[in-house]
Length: 573
Image (cartoon, rainbow, N blue to C red; front, side, top):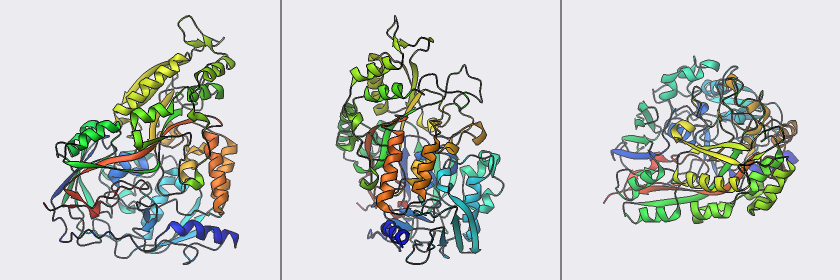
């Protein structure tokens, strides 16, 4: 009974009927013409299983949908399912080893064919196919089988009791694929299925009509969408590229676009744009953390391809915890927040900053300590050479390539961090890469964050919903990207610790909420304060902007920002 009670507590954050948002703006589908959206990180694929990039996942969410997702309050709501399975309604088994989903019979694919349990089963097969790489693999890690009960009923069986069974098929990162469209795209063939990856048949409010990689996506209203009065817009233009400054101006100053995503800009810059009078910024906190990731493998171009940045080639100095700690405590996080985010940022030492249940009391990194950082490098055997760069007795220089995506705030961060690191004798070369490429997931590109051909790299991401189990599962040994996985996989640090894997398995089998919180905090600490493999910098509030003429927008930090695009409409003047 303890397990049952705990799961019912965890399921308190679900709603059994879809959330309805009354906008007072009803009428026929497509009544409001076109809506223009700008994502300054251009879209590279519309298959979220082949990219860990937020911009790709969110662009795909206009067409592809999961069984359930999260609203702006972090409450789980059904989408393709009729309701949220729980212990109370019998959808979750008493022993917590299975969950049964019922598919809404009114939902059809955009081509008019029915959505079936086979499509759900196939999505699991797709992400777990041998020889392939799945960017969302952690969500399927504990699934033993997905069984078709009948056309509209599917049962997911776990390999052990699953106190949080809402991982696979829930949230923007784990939508349902149409089995018929992707049937020939399993395993190594997944990235080769260009037509399907660039134009997935979905159930969402819009259908892809044209996709130019790293440029623009065109959509039109899905004529088979389940609500006959939605979407209000007949079409969507999602333009990519440029930078956050241009995106913000295009909405708030010139009025060229209706919505701008992820305005990672200094607060005074956003304030100045808002004075343009064409649009307004919107903000909300969730679990988005800007951080530096340490590469535990050698990214040197001197290493042969297939060995470079793989576990076959350990990093020459970042495998030393003292070096990683020195790099972390040399950073003044409070100054980073001040110059980069203002009130829309908070300094943090945690990979998981929220909800409170899962947030570690981890504050040691918040005080910059250059003297201690230098002492740690001394202890590690690295002393300043004639040029000021530290070197050890084997001739290994503390010289690093530090990469991130092209963005004004990130380049400001790079410049400051380079200055701090070089003050303690760490030579630092800076590189920035176009966001469309960096987060694109192209297995042939050497410039993706998964490939990680640098010593350290910086970016931000978060997890859908309020439970970090799958997010923390990204750092399991079997989630390491490599040539064998088409460079897909969430464990970009190439970290592998049997103790971490065992503790994560304990989290996956624990129902008591307080215990889940304790274990999650310990996993967080293993990656951050105990090892500095991940160096969190800023708990970022999400800031975007929409035109004054665009109604129905509700910023959601727990799911896709475009989660309720079917409710958007043009405000009458």
